[in-house]
Length: 170
Image 1 (spheres, rainbow, N blue to C red):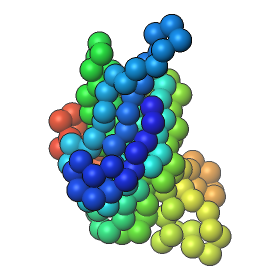
Image 2 (image 1 turned 60 degrees about the vertical axis):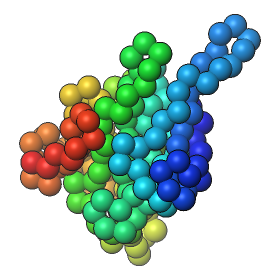
Image 3 (image 1 turned 90 degrees about the vertical axis):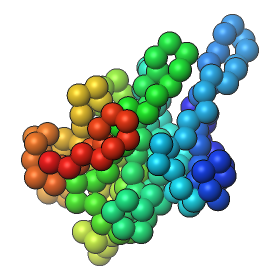
Image 4 (image 1 turned 120 degrees about the vertical axis):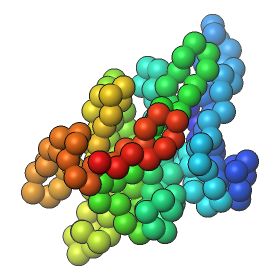
């Protein structure tokens, strides 16, 4: 997966990501990914990660919960097609948080980084939101300097996007 955060398909610097597959010694483009709700200056694709049939794409400047609150999108391969499965935002999303600054995935477990200047400005530390079980939902834990806080899926403030890109807040 290759990110192109300054692609302009959905507005200036809305971003995209490209999936390539190898057959023998040749690489070919299989898909171009864009956010279902992409808009100008989201920087979708600035960071990308791939594990098996799941791609994670960060959009740190997405504005769903205030300017530059950020998000991360999960895409799942079905045959040769790639479909957006979820859009993740921080349960405590706020302007300037830059959720989606870093993304990583290994099997069913993903991690999404955020600047979270509101919480750790003095220490210049980021926050990692640990995600598990991409198929059934995620945003289960939040790592902080004091350890990991495990949140059940139905905890107040835990948010994720339902299939189809609609945000679900419980």
